[in-house]
Image (cartoon, one colour):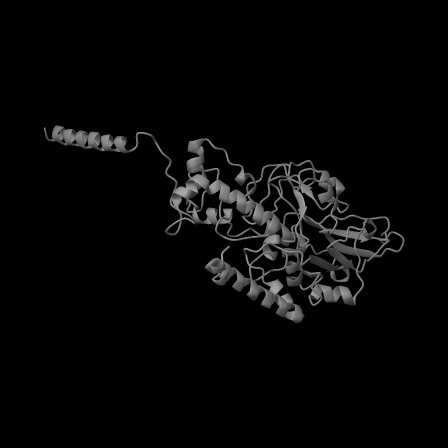
Length: 148
Length: 255
């Protein structure tokens, strides 16, 4: 008898809970992790709609003109929005938990950024000896003609 | 415009006139004092584009460069996140050490070979998309956003300075984006050169100094007071393949 009351109570709570949750989220929406700090570089609504335009604009300025202002730098996005994985390290774009993935997977919009750009903050690079110097032996050393 | 408008300029106009007057005053002062001009040019604010008032260049003193040392290569790979894909023949090389020997006399020389950052770069001439370009300050770069990986630039470069990335990469560093299907080469560590307020030398130069060889100089070729300009003025130096009239930014001494 005791058990049945408890079970009934649990059932009612569960039903109520699920009904309220259902009312709030009829359509499942992505839940990107919050970034560091109090707010983004622009209001969230603006960033959600237009972040790609700002990044594209910054990309041209940085690449061709050497303008490296922090506001719309991709590096800044990656640093503020790094999501910690189970191992305590920021997850890469391969993880569905990655900040960019959380919406882009939902919207089925493929992004190419991270085929070249690092998707996690760079802290230390292992100092590795990667290449052996190559030795080229020339038959003779040619003196350049029009030396300036 | 009415008489009244003329007599009382709007705040916008007033501000404009004020800043213009200040700018003119600064410019005038700078032209009078050459040293001041240089120091102003040195500190580029982050929001200002690079200008052709500078030209970055490098000088390699081959007499100080030793055959067994590849500190510059290691430093470059570390700085820019270059790692091997276990295909050594096609792995990217932004800088490599080359030993040359004159068969007739047996005289040898060792030198680092990298993008020569030409003033008239053939890689830029042949690029069909405009991905290969020269910044106003003389640094030759590849905009990988618009590179289609055709590799014309690799064929055009007399120095074999460029590498094609054949395989997908996943260990890039954040300040040196690199990816499959694009061509890349030495950037003079542009991320260090652009650093606001505290420009740093490229990683290879830093490593060479740290090793105590001090065979590499980096600086502004247009600044007569820079160490590299002083060195170039004092001692003879050469461009490799000067016959091509590319006006290289990298010069060598002792070859």
